[in-house]
Amino acid sequence: MEIKTGNVEKFLVEHGIKPSFQRISIMDYLWTHPTHPSVETIYNDLSPLIPTLSKTTVYNTLKLFVEHGAVHMLTIDEKTTHFDGDLSDHAHFFCLGCGQIYDIELGGKAKGVKIKSDLFSITETHLYYKGYCRNCKEKNDK
Amino acid sequence: MEIKTGNVEKFLVEHGIKPSFQRISIMDYLWTHPTHPSVETIYNDLSPLIPTLSKTTVYNTLKLFVEHGAVHMLTIDEKTTHFDGDLSDHAHFFCLGCGQIYDIELGGKAKGVKIKSDLFSITETHLYYKGYCRNCKEKNDK
DNA sequence: TCCATTTTTGTAATCTTTACAAATTTGATT
DNA sequence: AATCAAATTTGTAAAGATTACAAAAATGGA
Image (cartoon, rainbow over all chains, first blue to last red; front, side):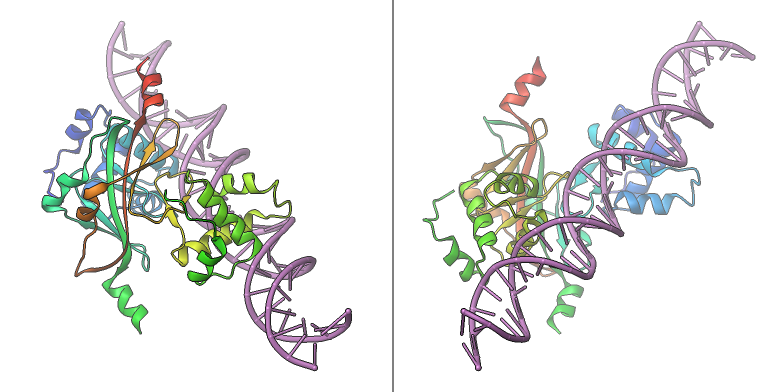
């Protein structure tokens, strides 16, 4: 993910979100952890730094971010939703073994994936793959 | 979805699934209802016809089907998983207003979407769109 | 400082899915 | 037809993720 040089606060304001301390922290976390974390992970990691943080706040904040188009929600994993602060066009790979989500750059292919429709007003495009990453494949092959 | 002329039982056997009464009923339901139903919907619709049916059986059966590649699992909707008995290459559209999932035929585009990777062993490809269907868009515009 | 509004927090409730053990069914064998 | 082991189904209870909601805290303007 390309480095967004620092200004989380500015970014939030540009997306119509009032920048509170919690909101800045969570968005900053997403920018510095392009690992598609879940609410649980974000909460566990930020909780020591922000002792008063509530899991509900993490839920509320991410919902707000998604509504304002400031982050993308990934529903690849049927167990939990994951979040992506990288708004660029890219696909994802979900490993059925370890559950990790990897980025896949599309390059020229990106154009072919987005479509227009007379029937639907399309606001989001999602492309993802499932299978096994190298580590998990090797384990399986044994 | 192209009509699969009748033989659910044969189809299950071909996919390595022992065809019990419940399994046949559920697969038949998926073939005759290409509406991407959830466990809840399948259970509610079949329950009157099969009074002893348990929701656990619906869960177990669909899991079995997915593992054997006999149906596809859709995780577009973060609230619930949906199931698709149509195994052909096609994309989906999820309406953020009414929650319905529509099929989108890809035509020639289908080729560009499937990829090969050195890093990952890819077994599934998913392409979907989100937005508003005509009905919901009109409601929103008012 | 005061007050209204917004944000955060914690708990309880809801909803989906899974675990598990008992009951039932199946199918082969006698 | 009766027996028995294996597979399948069932119902309940538990787990996990998410939301509802009301109280507490923080914010910002008058």
